[in-house]
Length: 256
Image (cartoon, rainbow, N blue to C red):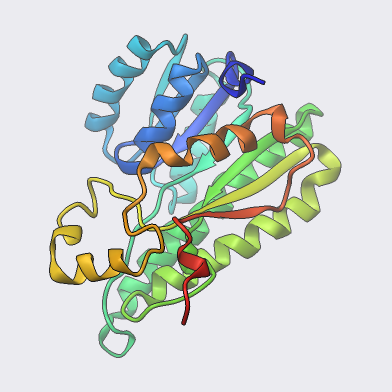
C-alpha cells in the first residue's frame, strides 16, 4: 500500500508551517503531490517555502498569514481557503509555542499566551474545518500535534504540558462527537525531536542529559513522524479516530 499516493490530489492545511515539524509536514504532503495550504504568522518564510513546495511536486500551494489564537484571523484565513481551490481534506494543527519557567515565577501573561495558541488555536481551526465538512456532507481528517508532555510532565514547562494534555483530550472529544459525520480526529505525540527551534538546547549539558533519558539514546528526526502522519491523513487509517500515538524513541516507557 502506497500511503503517499493515497494523499495525491488531497488538499492539506498545515498550521505553524514556517518552521520545524510544520515545515516537514508541508514538504511531505507536497512530495506526495497534495495541494498544500501553509499557514503561519511569518509570511516571509511561508513565501520562501511555497516556491520549494512547487518544486517538490505540489500542484497547488496556498500561502496564508494566520494567527491561530485570533478568531478573526482564523475566520479570514478560512474565507480565503474557501475562495481559493475547493474544500480541505486534511487539517494539521501544528502551530504551537512553549512557555519555559517555574510556575511560581511565571507571569500569567505567559500562561495565557501558551494556552491561546496551543489550545484555543486547535479549537478554532478544528471547529471551522468540521463545520464546513458537515455542511458539505463529507468527511475529513484532523491531525493534532500534541506531545508526550500531554501524558507525563517535567518541571519548568507547566503551561506547555497543560496545553498538550488539553489537546489530547480535545482530540478524543472531537473524535467522539464528529465520527458520525465521517470526520476523523487523531493526534501525534512527538517526543524530543531535533528542530531549528530547539537545536541550541541539545548542545548544552542539560540537553545532553535529557537525551540520555530516552531509551534509544538519541533525538528523533522530523521525518520519523511521516509514516504515522500518512496513516492518519489517508484512507489507510479510515477506521482510526480518537487515537493519540506517541513517537518518542520509547521515552514514555522509561522508568520513573
